Length: 347
Image (cartoon, rainbow, N blue to C red; front, side):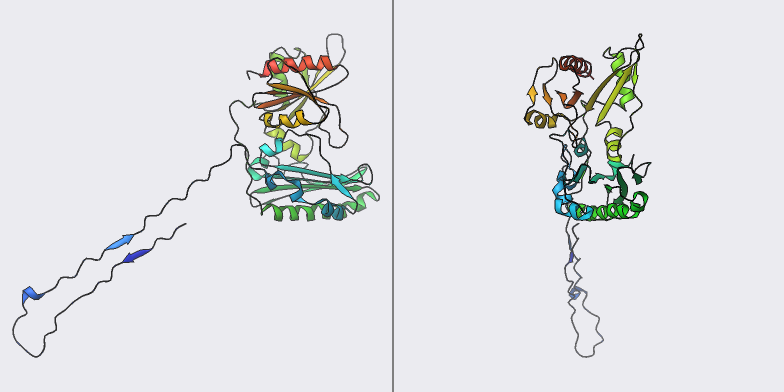
C-alpha cells in the first residue's frame, strides 16, 4: 500500500516594523495579506488485481519431492522408502489445488507407508475434521492418520509401520504422523498459495455415484433394475475430498436381473480431466482406439500405484475423462465405454 505524502508550502509572513514612537495610524495600503497555502496531494494508485490461472495452482506446485525427499521419509519410518506412483494420473487433486504423495517400503511388501495430502482449506472443508480423518487402525500395518489446518491449508498425513506389537505401537506411529504433518505445514508456506481450477459449464457435474447411476439408467446405458453397489466405502480422507466435489467418481453398479444373476459394472469419471489424457496415451504399452463421439481414446495401464490393477479404457470427451476397467472381454468393455461416451457427450 502506498503512503500518502502530504506536502504543504511554507507560509512566510512579512510585516513592516515601525521604529520609534508615533501617534500616526498605520497606512492601510501597506498591509500585506497572507498567501493561501497550497497542497499537492498524491493520488493513490490502486494495486492491480492479480490474474488467477484458470487451471489453478496445486500445493507445493504439485511436486512431491518438495514435500519430502526419499531419504527424509526413510529416516522417519526407519526403513528404506521410495515413492509409490501410478504410471499416469488424472490429477483430480491438482484441480482442487491439492497434492497427494505416497511412499512405500522398498525392503518388503507394504513394509511401511507415508501418505501426505495438502489442499486449500476451502477445497478440504467438507471433509476436514470429519469421521475417519484422524486416528489409528491395527492390522498388517499399524496406521495412524492426523490432520491440521495452517494458513489456509489443510494437511493430512497417514503413517504406517508393520505391526509387531500391535496397539503398543500406536503412540510411536502417531508421533511419526504428527511430526510429518508439522514439517509439511512449515514447508508449504514457502510456496505460492494454492487454489482450485475454475470449473466451467462443460465439466460434467454429478453429486455422487448414485446420481451418475440414476442418470445412466434414464439414458438407457444401464438397465432399469441397476442400482449403486453400496459395499464399497468412500476411501481415504483425500479420496473423499475429490469425490465430494465430483472430480473423481469411481462407481460400481449392480443388476440383480430377472434371472437372479448378479452382474456388476464399474466405471470412473474425471470432470475437467482431459488435460491429463496425454499422460495416459504416452505410457508404454498404451494403445489408442476409436470410440464414436470421443475426442480420443486409449487402452492404458491401471491406476493402482501398489499393484497396478486392471488396465483402463480411457476416453476424452470435451474437457472430461471417462474410464472403464478392462475385465475378461475387452471388446465388451469397449462397447460399454462407447455407450457411456454417447450418454455423457451432451451432459
